[in-house]
Image 1 (tube, rainbow, N blue to C red):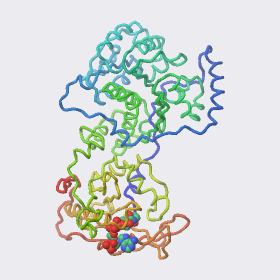
Image 2: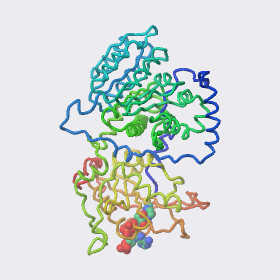
Image 3: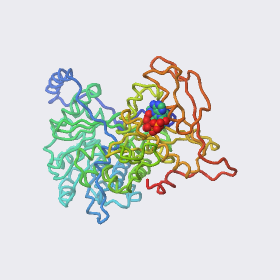
Image 4: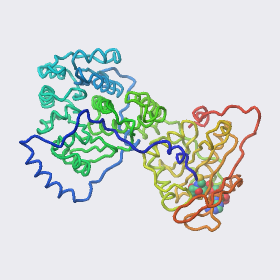
Length: 567
Ligand SMILES: CC(C)(COP(=O)(O)OP(=O)(O)OC[C@H]1O[C@@H](n2cnc3c(N)ncnc32)[C@H](O)[C@@H]1OP(=O)(O)O)[C@@H](O)C(=O)NCCC(=O)NCCS
C-alpha cells in the first residue's frame, strides 16, 4: 500500500522554476509611440480574459521521448545539423559559454559561436568542440551592428538554426543586429534574453518559414507585449497564446511550470524543474539546448517542449546529488546524460522500445494461467518511465476512492516518472501488459535505509480495478519473488491498510491476497492513517523467500539480474 515515493518525494521539493533571473530591473514602461494602442489593446484583452482558461496539456516523459529523433549509427557531423549562436559580450562571457555548451550537449553536429574576442578566451579552453567566428566589438564590448552581413553570409552556409541573445547586452547595436538577422535568416531562429529586448516595442520582423521561438521570462514577456508583469502572471496562458498567434512564433514563457504556446493555439505546460535553476546561466543553457534540438531537425514546437522538460528533469536529478542550493546550471549536463542513458542511448520512443525489447516472457506460475483463459495473452516486462501515464490511470481511483493507499492527492505524471526512475535504479518495477495495454504493476522498494535492512524490501502492487481476480496479481508477485531471490533479498514486507469493518473505501481483499500468497501478519498499528474522515489501522505482512545465513552474500541490483529474466 505504501508508495516508495511517499518517503522519497518528501526530499524532493516540488517548487520548480526554469527562468533565468533578470539581469536588470524590469520596468513596466514601454515606448511612448505604442503605449496608447497597447493599453487599449490590453483593456480589450482584459474582457477576453473573463473567458474560461485555455486548455493546457502537461508535458510528460512520454511526450518528450516520443519526439526525440533516433541517432543513426551510420552518420556524420553534418547529419545532426548546424547551429550558429550569436552570444556574449565582454561583460557576459559566461552566457556565451553556457549556451554553446547547451547546444553541443543537445546533440547538434556543428556549433559555431559568433562573438567578440574576449569571450573566446573563456569559451575556447572549456569547449574546444565549437567553431569560433570572431566579430567586431561595439563601444560597449558587445557585438557590433557592422557584423550583420558577415553573419548572414555565414548563415547562408547550410545552417538549420540561429540562436541570438544570451549575454549580448541590451545595446543599440544588439537591437539593430538582431532585427537585421531575424528578418533575413532562412532557418529556425531562437530569440533569448537580450535579443528579446531588441524586438520589444517593435513588431517581430517577418519570421523565416522555418519558424521563430522566443523564450521570455515574465519581465521580458511584459516588455514584448507592453503590459505589466502582474498582467503576464495573471493571464499567462492567454498572453502567451495571443502573442504566439499574432507574431506567428512559438512562445516559451519561462516560469515555475513554464508554458509553451504555438501559433496554432496549442498550449503545453512543463512538469519538471526546481529552484536550483533559479540562477543566472540556466536560461542560457536552455536556449542552447532548444536551438540544438531545432538544428538537428526537430520542429520548433517539439524542440521547445523537449528542451524545457529535459532541462527541468536534469535539474531535478542534479538537486538530488548536489541540493538545489549548491548545484550550478552547468552541473545539470551530467544528469542530462544520465537521463538519455536511462532511455537507451538511441532514445527510441516507447513504441520503438517495445520493438527492440526482448520478447517479454508469457505469464506463468499463475493459478489461472492454464487453459484457454485470458492469462495466456498477458506479458510481464520491466516498467519504463514512459509508462507513467498508464500506471497513473490504474493508481488514480485507488487514491481518489479508497483508503488502500494513504496518499491524498493523485501524483502528477512527472512525479510518477520520478518514482519509476528512482525505483529502477536498484529494484524491480514490473508491469503486466495485454495487447499493449497495462493492467497492473508491482515494485519493490527499500524497507528502511539502514545497511542492516539491505536484504529486506517493501512490496507494492496495484491491479486495474476491472482486471482484478484474473490472476494478474499472482503473476506479478511470482515474477517479483524470482527476481528478488536472485538479488539475494530474503524478507518481503507488505504494508496494508486494514479495517475491522469493511466498506466501499476499504475491504480486506489485499490482506486475503497476501495470505493466499504465503504472507503472514506480523504487526498491527492501530488507527494510524486518517482519510475520508475515518481512522484506519495498518498491518505489516511478511514473507520469507530465502535463507538467513551468516555471512550473507551482498545484495545485487535489479540491473545485475534483469537479463536472466529477459527483462
Ligand atoms: C490485491 C490485488 C493486488 C490482488 O490482485 P489480483 O490480480 O486481483 O489477485 P489474483 O487474481 O492474482 O488473486 C490471487 C489470489 O488472491 C486471493 N484473492 C484475491 N482477491 C481476493 C478477494 N477479493 N477475496 C478473497 N481472496 C482474494 C485469492 O486466493 C486469489 O486466488 P484464487 O482466486 O485462485 O483463489 C488487487 O486486487 C489490487 O490491486 N488491489 C488494490 C491494491 C492493493 O490492495 N494492493 C496491495 C497493497 S500494496
